[in-house]
Length: 153
Image 1: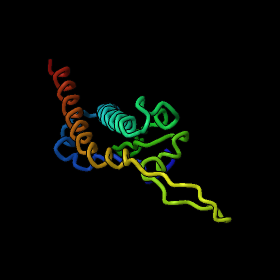
Image 2: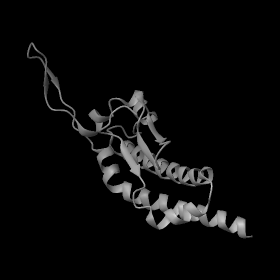
Image 3: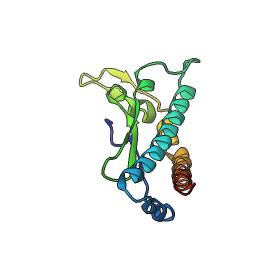
Image 4: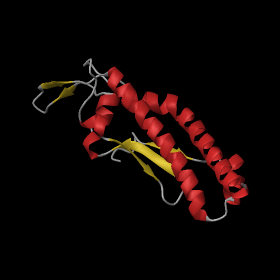
């Protein structure tokens, strides 16, 4: 993940309703497996929504087929329950596409143009992050119920 401004950070802070159920699972390995699987699902949801918004907002009818589209990435945190969604090295220009630039001039006063931002990543961050959080919590609850049913059944 390259640009800290463009990363979406998912931290499970409101986990109080699920925390007790996770601790009932016992060993930390199964706790991490349950939470990591849910975080993976939520991260992939955000990546897919970001890709969709990027394709829709580009000038070309076919959308984007280049490095930026392929650079979407996520990483599950190892020490805390959380995930980062952002871009790999090939997508280091994502902030320029998303936020745009102002008019640019060289030192010799030659005009180099500007980029109008399409705000695909800001919209993904604002509109889709709450849905991803609900998706993560529902996935955790479902996994815990499955594990309890296996142990009891």
